[in-house]
Image 1 (spheres, protein in one colour):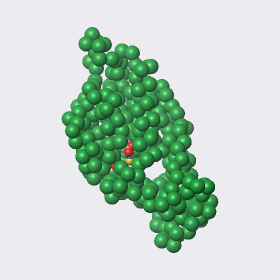
Image 2: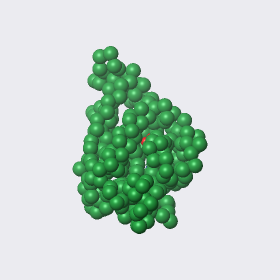
Image 3: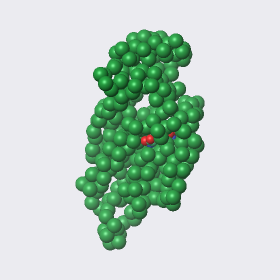
Image 4: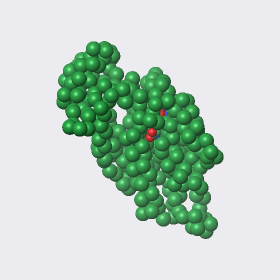
Length: 282
Ligand SMILES: C[S@@+](CC[C@H](N)C(=O)[O-])C[C@H]1O[C@@H](n2cnc3c(N)ncnc32)[C@H](O)[C@@H]1O
């Protein structure tokens, strides 16, 4: 719980800047929506995603509700609402401030219910046609147990679709930290694509679609990159902080070395994100 509180606080502090800084996360949410749409088009005849006209003739109960985990400021929530205006979304996040921004941005939409809290304290008296999450699941320490909880929320024909940051994200920064400050390595590392697939299979999910995308983001210099990730809420979490913090002098050295090592002509410095996308069903 201590770790969740810390993550929640980091995102609450970043809530007012997240929306402006989340350029990659926005692309990721758009790419996830495209995958959900193709899964809907291809795979799910007779399932929760059946077309409107089929619903009238379908004898089985079909859920029209979606659940979103780690909705943050609502990047994916808004895309879901736009794409599926007939469906209701229950969206959960640890940070009341992130939810506050999401509420402002979704203010006109009665189809979304926001919940503040951790997944472990969330209970629902219904099953969902879609359980979705974008750029959030890497914050969970034990993915297998989270997948099990999310599986129990799914309707019999439901889809589980998510994206998360995997090993190789901010690889430039991690490489420099290991090299410059080997005694201050972050406490946790991101999951690998292989470990995510293993955990999904261990929970009985069948994987319908799986992709890994790489995104490159450019910043004026190393200092601007460090400021941007701080304003995203990424620093202060277990992927950034070690047992002891980097001092101001160490941060300056990190930024300068970043400029020397990862400068790209005319573009500034580069930061890489590796993102896994998974669409699964039971
Ligand atoms: C990087 S943000 C992504 C937000 C949004 N999905 C997007 O694509 O922009 C990750 C979000 O996950 C939330 N989060 C992390 N751990 C959580 C948990 N245990 N329960 C609920 N939300 C959590 C954080 O509060 C944060 O808002």
